[in-house]
Image (cartoon, rainbow, N blue to C red):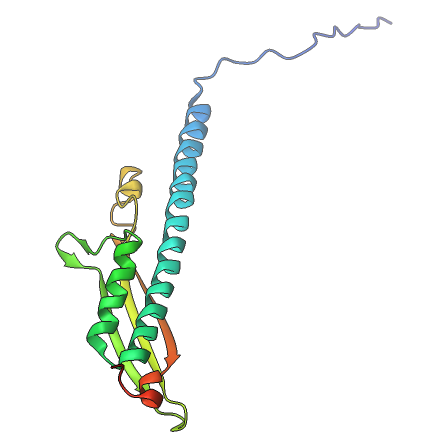
Length: 161
């Protein structure tokens, strides 16, 4: 009886591949990395715009509470947006509006002035996703709004002299 010895060859030899799967993996990881990088740049800028918008609404409400004049409240909002260097127009369209300057008479003893500001914040890189093959994936602006209220001081003291 003969016993065959099995030869150990070690590692199996690999067949030569074309590397297509490595190429696809690199393309997908690069594209997803660009998307994540774009989002990391877009979201903090939108948070900054949101903070400025809240401040503008508070300033408008404060001025409306002192003067009881919607035009001066709009001027205060515009000055706040100017001081923050936010764009006021985009491709010929005005980006912000003060929709509401209202006296809320829920309690006649303490009326309140409310100011609502709407702003269409332009995103930093509107063509980022179009470059990656997804045209029209994001609008050129992101609509935001903020409201603020303040006690109507003109109701209690009369208009400033």
